[in-house]
Image (cartoon, rainbow, N blue to C red; front, side, top):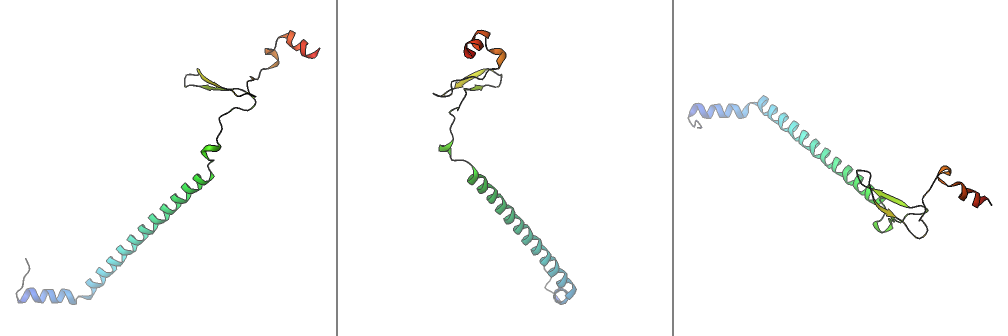
Length: 114
């Protein structure tokens, strides 16, 4: 409860005239405002960086319509987690499987040479 008697009014007047307390309050308020503005500026800067990075990734990504899963040259095999073949992707000019020389029968090697 506030004291509105003579002593209470005198104490309030002294408190209002006390310059060191007012200066301390102003310093604390200024410091709080500076910290608040710094945090706000940091948040805006980080948000700007985030938006810039996101836009950079989006602009450098290929168009969805440009992506082609059609194999070129050789067949493509799709495997699941266990290593089992789930699909074989082929097109008209890519139904080939690369093999090494030891996988080719000797008669076939001689047939191409002859």
